[in-house]
Image (cartoon, rainbow, N blue to C red; front, side, top):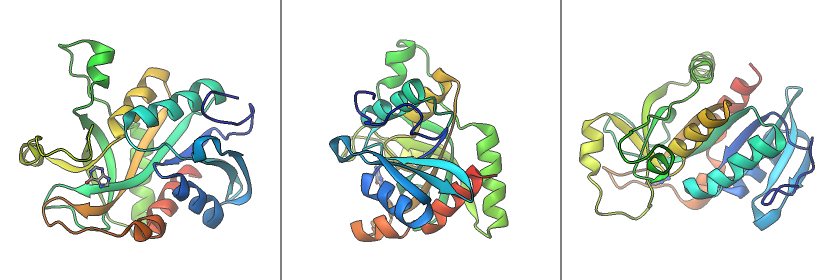
Length: 234
Ligand code: HPA
């Protein structure tokens, strides 16, 4: 067992869906997977393994923010041999081109987290990017499903509440939406030579002030889950 995931070797599939919210992990396992086994409840950061269309898939909560996601991602990869991670989550729309409930594929990650500088030092502005095969596949699976996705740059904010950041500048430079994890996920995927893709649903919008309820967030992401799962079995 690893420090933060209470699973034995072999209990986690090579492909993992990773929502931030552990209750969303349970929701995915309960509603989309078959033959489900719960492999972890450490800190209530639930993890499940089941099958989708016959393929073994795990679902693991990451918690909020890069520090939490980095714990689970690192252990999944280093201790359990995970090769492919789909982050499925919610985001705040930033660009006027994205709207509530839109599905966004994270092509690249911008961040004000220190993780880039901690990794590369002060004068190297590394760009964490999605795995192209996963991005390409998800884009085309979405088309087949009749889902129009938006593809672009995601801002992983180090703080949810931050009135000091120049949001407009990020929008001007084409950033589509904000959450708190993608840059960290893509950086770690690059470090350990595994594949990662973030798929997001717009749950609130920074420009319009619209927002979904917590209950809505938990249950209204069916399309995104299906897209992630259909891409995973492709
Ligand atoms: N900011 C950061 N993370 C988020 C947001 C947001 O507005 N919405 C959903 N996750």
